[in-house]
Length: 272
Ligand SMILES: *[C@@H]1O[C@H](CO)[C@@H](O)[C@H](O)[C@H]1NC(C)=O
Ligand SMILES: *[C@@H]1O[C@H](CO)[C@@H](O)[C@H](O)[C@H]1NC(C)=O
Ligand SMILES: *[C@@H]1O[C@H](CO)[C@@H](O)[C@H](O)[C@H]1NC(C)=O
Image (cartoon, rainbow, N blue to C red; front, side, top):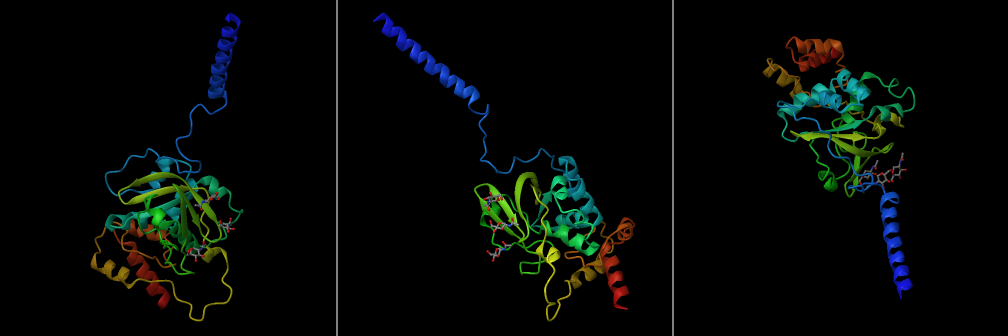
């Protein structure tokens, strides 16, 4: 009787011990609170008082030096900021990390001319604020800032499964790996790949019968004349390829002349 009790006690003790062991060693100390591949929680970036500036946000987040440089040299950062101030639909930026850029075949960026660099940056920008939940009901293809939803107009596709969000360009499948910022009509998501648009990286076979010129919005010219005092670089919804805003055009902005005037001059110069 006594021996039997001891055996039973030993048995249950060892069960307790085993279960403790498996708790401690058999599993990670903290069970993950999110499903695998779900985007990480928003980075702790303070919401600015005024219009958010994507380059400052990316700087705070860290690990986006190449993207920041491209957004600045193409002036797409200014374009987003200028339009964000007047937008009630907002913007979404897919932000590839430095390691995403370093995964590109070498020379990929250098092979692009300035127009293509602008398009590449605009391709990472959606002219609408999307929360992660919004992507679940999005209709493909999705319009990017580089064009429209038609083939040849730089669309991309977004697919979701639970809280996981994937982006497909036709050349690249990328995954949203985190929210960097989501406030004031601006969403910035970390992506693990550079979104290479078909329309740049796959040469078109035969030239289309009537090659449509890249959209030049007459609005941009009118607005420039109408509001010469505008201090921000607004009203350039689809900059023409000639808007290769290097130091020259940016210099103009600094002196109070809107970039769109620069474009008009540029266009005028070209049409002579
Ligand atoms: C997203 O991409 C990952 C990695 O390529 C893949 O495993 C997953 O099934 C994809 N999910 C969706 C919703 O497309
Ligand atoms: C994007 O989605 C549209 C509509 O579902 C589909 O026709 C198209 O093939 C997709 N493109 C890519 C690159 O996944
Ligand atoms: C992207 O994903 C689609 C659908 O899962 C697949 O058919 C395609 O081969 C993938 N493309 C690349 C470049 O990985």
